[in-house]
Image 1 (cartoon, one colour):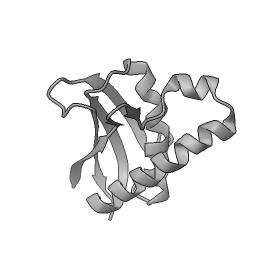
Image 2 (cartoon, rainbow, N blue to C red; image 1 turned 90 degrees about the vertical axis):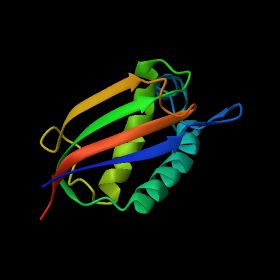
Image 3 (tube, one colour; image 1 turned 120 degrees about the vertical axis):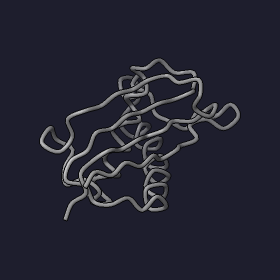
Image 4 (spheres, rainbow, N blue to C red; image 1 turned 180 degrees about the vertical axis):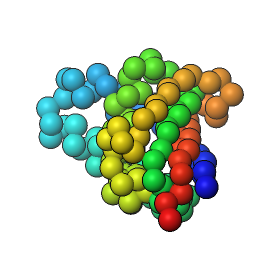
Length: 125
């Protein structure tokens, strides 16, 4: 059976952007980057728990956003999100055997300052 669920993440509050950009991966020292990633991973973990998704045999991930970031900069936030899916055992691994599709798009119909992570996959078991 195929399941689909969407996790909504408020990426910006006021002037504070809470996501990690690809540019930050390239420019920050690893300790400074970790200080940004740890709270982000905690938020993602809590959102995943709240959503209570089933364990999946494989997944496809679509990201839609309405924030002031270039599409390629959103990529910096995908890695910690997928790491949290793995840590919560929603997906067995994050390699091409279990995850073969990713799309990122800007969508003005998404709530302002939000990222929507839509996961589609085959329910395990």
